[in-house]
Length: 135
Image 1 (tube, rainbow, N blue to C red):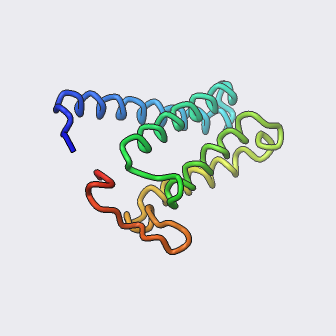
Image 2 (tube, rainbow, N blue to C red):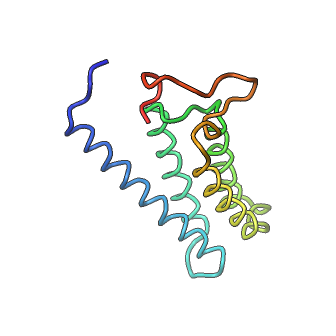
Image 3 (cartoon, rainbow, N blue to C red):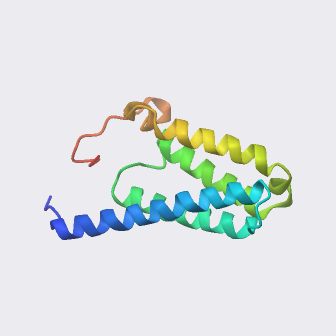
């Protein structure tokens, strides 16, 4: 497999860091809106959802995760919960506790050991060779 030029790698990393920064700011804005700050809940949810989807695409493209793994399932659940909180009346009614559960789940799942984050149901091995998963 040919390596990418350093410049491309640096550019991709900078883009990913920028998207992650926007995502974190959007999560803060969503939490603030839910706690009564004069921010639009729907707009904050849309930015959180959009930046989260973009992060998912970047991770899938770089083979850092697969949807069939625990980490992939957690990301899909988080995106669905943000959409539910932001765009439904039922989600709005339960938004504050759902947001806190989402925040705790996000932090917990992101910091699990690699073998747990990449666990696949059904007994499939979560261990991939370095050629299959760069990081």
